[in-house]
Length: 132
Image 1 (cartoon, rainbow, N blue to C red):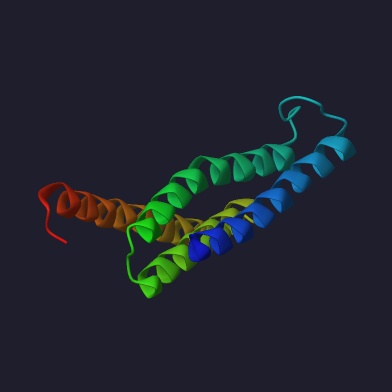
Image 2: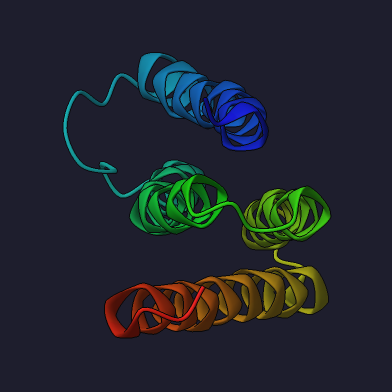
């Protein structure tokens, strides 16, 4: 079982649904079925939703692998929380044209992904070399 990753995945999925519903609402109100129809608010909502979808799956895969390899639960939890914060800050920053939060969000996201990648590489090397 991966309880921490499961919790983080649930939280991120609920936020993903919220972002998707924002796109749907704007599409309906602007009567745009495909693309942004020249509407800048809809274009932003589409990119917020799309950017979230681009980064979250890789983060969850790496987080789950780290938890699977019996990393310290506090490390997994902190990295999961920074991924959530990063995606939230970025989405809000992009949606509200707040460059500070957008940059903060990408910093949290990239920092989390890089840390997860390095930790997973270390676990893989340890397991391949027989050092446990």
